[in-house]
Length: 451
Ligand code: PLP
Image (cartoon, rainbow, N blue to C red; front, side, top):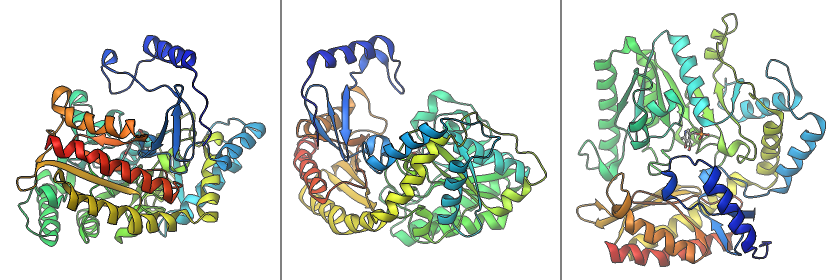
């Protein structure tokens, strides 16, 4: 790690410009104090004041190959020297090569990729394709999901981020997915949860009218709403319902694709093939904005002689695709998928379960690969969350205290309502991973006190 030496003048200047001129997302502008970041390397970044942080959030769970990966930087530099940009209606070698690499790791029969600038517009376009192919407009999406912050994507979202933006798309209906720890179905086992969640989905389809429903969209593993790993049989059950009722199955893999749980696409771990797969973040670790839709041949062929009415100026931008190609090379050369599965099973899972034994504030631990959640509660019996759902201000104080304890010890955590997520870069060293888990373990004492 090359921590730059403290530069308090730079720190003050960055803060001043930011506070005066940058309008931040998801924030009340006068109530925030963003950290001025000076640089980063691998799983660490540092500020201008000389403090380093282990990045256990991979920024927004996009930085799968870590900060300043030399291969990704070199690929961008090489591409910039050759051809910095080209419009999407022309063919380009870098774009074509990345599309081929992606289709090669997608399920059989997914030959084509439509590129976007990120995850939300990938979901927008997947929904658009489903509506055009089926001629049906309604889309079913899960409560406790996040699909992005453009008009249809935010409406698909099943969490509070949707509320202030409604109704952007009137043809979206939400349903409950499986979440055994807080079962909406009063199930007492995982099998019962799966069966009842599928019955509930089928009832929703029947009552909403199969003839009106074009698509169902699901995060393969629910991300920001709690790392909810689907129980065995749930996703194949959704697939069967989609087949039965003529509905397109869209798998949102924006957060979980490209290695987060140790698979190219998370669907590979759950024995299911959707009709459309959306991706972004990990495809190039977010070094240059990129997302897209991987399209099954059955859907792609609909547009062989019918125009697809969608496009973006920067679709398949060469500077974004070049680090995507490098990502494939690094994953294969460095055995990234294998190391993620190994670290998840051998280091993170066992250690978090140990913490659950030790800390009364831990209600449940769940996850896979390098994607885990610790759900904090006031009372293990009642499962009352440590802070209320959609907590803000004083209500959120115990989680803020937990996060502050982590930062003081040199760890940048990912916290959301009553959860701590563990999502470090996939290249993190085992030593740093253990150090970060030690910090979380210690900081949980703050949550225990508040519980
Ligand atoms: N879908 C999922 C599952 C996500 O986690 C996100 C972002 O966190 C999005 C979509 C939106 O992606 P973007 O912010 O690139 O538009």
